[in-house]
Length: 368
Image (cartoon, rainbow, N blue to C red):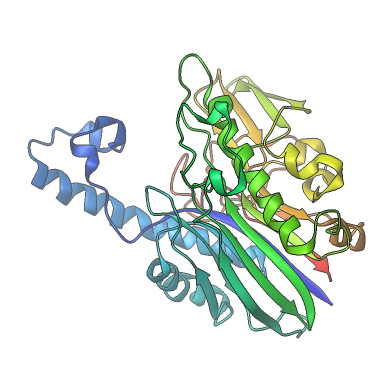
């Protein structure tokens, strides 16, 4: 019996407009900066038109990426609310895959922008095994004090009674053809701009470390510390961190070279330490594990994995000969692909936008 389990940061699946760019230029879209807009009313009218006109292409591409992933269970990040998810599934995804994802789950989390994690599921796997949800639980209310995770490194931006998860850790107990599977769906703290001479990834690392420690605590509290190795669980989502990356050197005119760097300090070390869980993406070639292209111009660009399916030791052993698949056809045209990895882009993909998302869907076929 096989289950296709996937994750995808769909990038800002929103039901509302953000007009704050009129007063805050840092939040103003680049195309709006080309025009001389004299008053806020005109700005709002033009910004709404820009969003509506660009969203249709974007969501067609998002739906194509999800259809190609063909997951039975798909974990999602950056969902505005359940209404947004339902509207997208009915208006776009249904037209490509039919009435596949009948079941949708989302709990409002802690994100200041209102973006949440969610899950879409089929009634049954492609092999005909029934997918049942037994229980669903949010851990958004947990604080640093609750789990004794507050550290001096957190004190510059957080307080002991602040929430640990900047979005949520959504826990789903499932049965797949009668067999148990527990999912932990995450979207960890982003690598925002740094401060005081510290780069953004390093500056926000303590927050993600607390989040990963909290996830491990939740799993060990559920199954028993030292007793998790033979359980069926998976940790899925956009974890906004990496233990390795591929530095991209060069430019479009002169060509690119790709240099793999491994062993980077990461909040994800909490998961990999002592074999607690396995990042099964590492079964792929080192240059072929990336799910996002980061660039701030030719001087700062790399490919990295931000989207994960971590498996418990039991699931990893049972699927030892398998590796995740990555759907990269929705990446923007500007993304440099290492040799042998080029794919056919979806129709209407732009240089930077429209695109399916800045992230790639990741999916893996699992025997339970």
